Image (cartoon, rainbow, N blue to C red):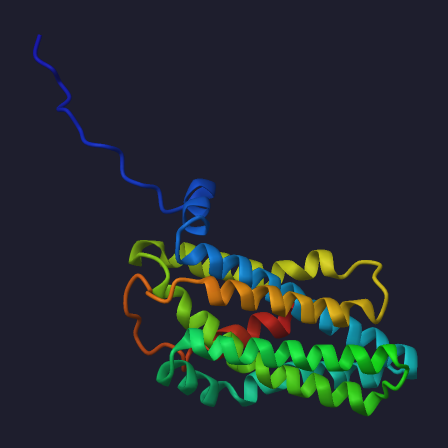
Length: 227
């Protein structure tokens, strides 16, 4: 009897689902980036939560909480064109190795001021504005670097995972933590990410186009809607 089905090769690799996500996360280039970026995202939400609690404890003003949110997120929108140009014109890994230590130092300084009891609304707003500006350049470099860390067919999966971990830290950060503890936890998370950045492979899978100019604008709506 003649075989009705020809011998077929191995089944194609699935680009969707849990197995695909695990394959992308466990890859040599994207794995360290994913872990470090997740730590950074958690630290960022720690900082947002702590700053909000401190301002509310000082003033009990909903208006000032709105001003604080403006200081945290508006710089991402304002500096988007320049952040995208930096992400396109410079090594994106190097950009992150500059912005992440700067954010860690800023958060650590705010934590020291809060623990010492010298935090005022003006100080918290100023530090939040500074961190928001740093996040503008961080978001652009992160989102523009993702496609260079995976093979082209895995780019949609990697982008989706990147967006999930950027916002997923908020799920467990907004818990019954003290108002000042998250400030130094933010600094610690930034330090953890810095270690991953240093150990991360410096040779990407492939060259990526100049997409840094678009990256900040893609991240702003999701951030502001969830916030």
